[in-house]
Amino acid sequence: MDLNNKKISDLVGENYVYASVLHYFGIQFYNYSEETLLQVCQKKGICMSTLISGLESAVDVEEMDEVALVGYPIDLVIEYLKHAHYIFIKRRLPYIASLISELPNTSTRYHPVVKDLKFVFPLFVEDFIHHIYEEEDNLFGYVAMLKKVLIKEYNPSELYYEMEKYSIQKHAIEHDVHDDEMTGIRNITNDYSIAKNAPLHIKVLYAELESFEKSLITHARIEDEILFPKALVLEREVKMLLQQKVRSN
Image (cartoon, rainbow, N blue to C red; front, side, top):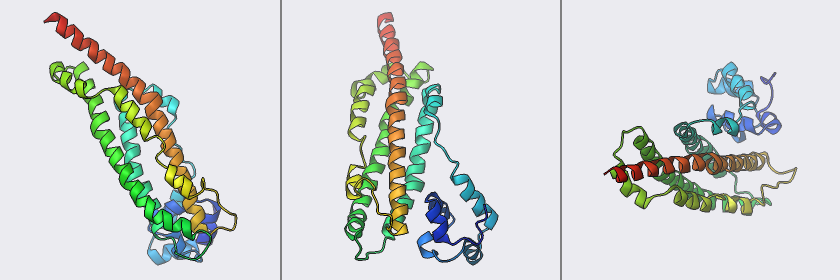
């Protein structure tokens, strides 16, 4: 596509995903809206072909097919989920946070929304990150211990006490509590509904928030429908192993 002489505002207006690509190249679209892509690249010393390649590939990015994940062993499913956590925490949330922090406090119809998002979103991020790390430490750590028992790298007797404290069912119940984490954001933005004449900055932000929520829904479904069933099977196998060990003693 011929993007060299296209204004940044026009480029982002055509596809809001481009705004995130520009962000990762150090270009905040709202600061260069009237300049062309070529002008911005020359000003910031960015390789034009590399940036265009990033823009072109961004629209083709798809999340992994859930059907494929069903056939993966549980440790690879967990690695996939950990990678998704990394992308959420290190890339997507910081980008959304920057979009919100740079929203102008103008007296438009979106002023109350801007004010609420600037207050609520940092709290959401803090709670979300805490939940992610807790899940990795507790659930993923517990599954790792179960795996080690089956491959005889962990003493089953030691795990007995861990299984008194934890269970996959308990984790699944606690997971349900966090399933709709973006309720507050959705309420503030009125389900991401937006007027056609809304500022481009707002349009990009709402699109990014909605996209992030869809990713969270997919992520939660992978945990509910793939991870937890596999983990329950694994836990049952370990319990049977422990029972056999008790009977043999």
